Amino acid sequence: MRRLLRAKDRMDAASHEEWPVERLARVSRVSEAHFARSFRDAFGLPPHRYLLTRRIERAKSLLRDTDLSITEIAFRTGWKSLGTFGRTFRDVIGESPGELRAREQSVPQALDQVPGCYSSAAHRPDLNIAVSEKRRQEAGGIKRTTRKTEVP
Amino acid sequence: MSQGIGLVGLYVRDQDEALKFYVEKLGFRVHTDVKNGDYRWLTVQHPEQPSFQLGLYKPGPPVLDAATAQTLREVVAKGAMPPLVLVVDDCRVAYEQMRARGVEFTQEPVDRYGNVDANFRDPSGNGWKMMEERGAR
Picture 1 (cartoon, chains in turn blue, yellow):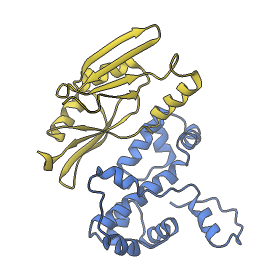
Picture 2: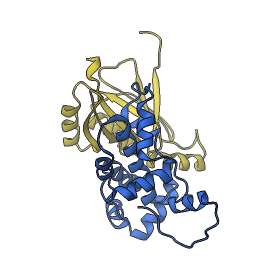
Picture 3: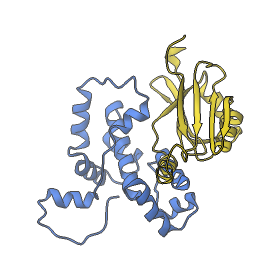
Picture 4: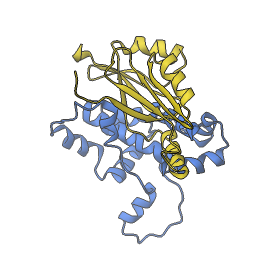
């Protein structure tokens, strides 16, 4: 368990990097099959989805606290294309990066008494289902696909 | 000061290991170390904070049943215990010193809103934020 936390810490420290299961399993010094299953058991979501929540969290904080362009934020948080970032962000958060920025920057924040990473964690999406599943549900559950791929 | 918080406890997976970590790597001092059968009351203190003790406890019998103790050990190892903050005068200097002693850092010192902070974990998985508060100096 402590080894799994080490892999999670590494994702936290560099969520913009690619974290395929092989790499995570290497950090934890366990087999890939064991890693994927035990990570999910321990933390309640699969590693790639956890990484997605951290990327979205970081993107939200950059949107709120910096004047970086949305393209720059997409690349800094590990997306290879602006389109995928925008689409995934909207699917997870329910509004586009630009909409979130406009809304957040118009409201003064009272979180300056909270250490940065904890206040940021409060804005982490609670992603308890796959993004593809969320999309299906929001589409009205009409499409019944067997697509197993998730983003990213 | 005569009123206030005197002790907060942490769960650790091994009290000997925790004692070594907090004393040898972080520079804390032992305040109380008393054994009674399987039970060990162990507290340490920051050298500059004599009014506060940090308890290092192993979850287990006789205080907790085996299943609860197992759950708590897992919760600690998952890093799911609440945040802890260690305040230092110079975060980068403390980081270099602690890293040289083998402390496992999960985040290097970063400037944030005028403060500098770094993250590390104790051997059990308890997460600490080490913070240099520039505004408070």
